[in-house]
Structure formats: C-alpha cells, structure tokens
Image 1 (cartoon, rainbow, N blue to C red):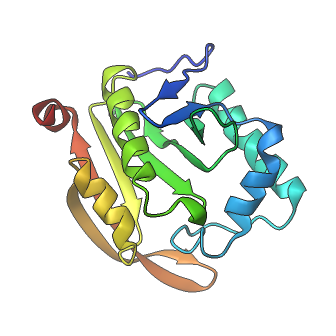
Image 2: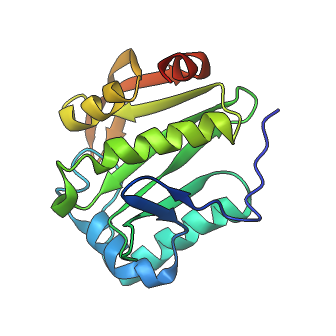
Length: 188
C-alpha cells in the first residue's frame, strides 16, 4: 500500500516557479483566491467569506499534510514569496496508488502557462517521488482552459458524468481525466 511521509515538506521548483508550504501569512491571498467567484467558477466548493475562513482553509491543508493524507503547495513566482495559486493532491486512494490533482490560480495570472508548468511538475513528482500508478483530474466540462492544461500534460479523457454532483441546489456534470505512470514515462 502507498504511504506518504511529509515530515520534511518537499519544496518544488520549475523554471519560473517555486512551490512551498502554505502558511498563515498567505491568508490574504487565500482569501482573495477562494472568495472570488471568478476563481471559484469551476470549483464546486463554498466561497470563503472572511479571513477566519481562509485561516481555517490553510489549517485544513496543513492538517492533511501533517497526517500524511494529502499535500498542497503555495504556487509562487521565483524571487517573490506571494502566493498566486494552490496546487496539490487530494482524495488519494492509497490502496490503488492513485490520487486526484487539483489546482487554482489568481485571475491576474491566467493565460501565462503557469498552471501547465505546475501540473507538469506535480505529475513528475507524483510518479517519481510519491509512487503513484495513476493521477486523475476532475473538472467542470465548461472549463476549457483546465481541459487544455491536462491535455498538454498527457492526460486522457476517461469519463463524462452527467449531473453527478449536487452543489448549491444544482446538479453539475464532471469530466474525469487521467494519466498512467507508463504514459508519463513514454512522454519523457
């Protein structure tokens, strides 16, 4: 069975980005990210209403890391410490060596290839360091930008579930993408 050990938090880097642990100093950016209807348009979760909610969100993320149940990173531009997004692995199936990748970024950074770069690094880390056999992503079918990010990173559309999620009184569809370790290796 798959296990995690995040005793020493893994800091990740790409050409432009540094992925570090979230801290309570990120509260303003987490509030901005999670309270903005545009940022949350395709994420069926409640909006953060105040800084206390943002602190609670950070605490929940760090608790999952402490319990070795999941991991999230603050996305920052190298040389700057400001959080511009959050990326991580959620809903890990330890028995199946599979996890779901999730990501979000502040609207000011849309269209710059940042999410594509971050997802590439997380996929690499997930397969090479965490030992995943497969990684999945669950997206809103209207989120074309997210779909492109996944396709650029070698993900394959696996399913389109109709009205499988109830959020705020409305049934939503979801599209599931996935990549296997052998597919990742073949792309390298």
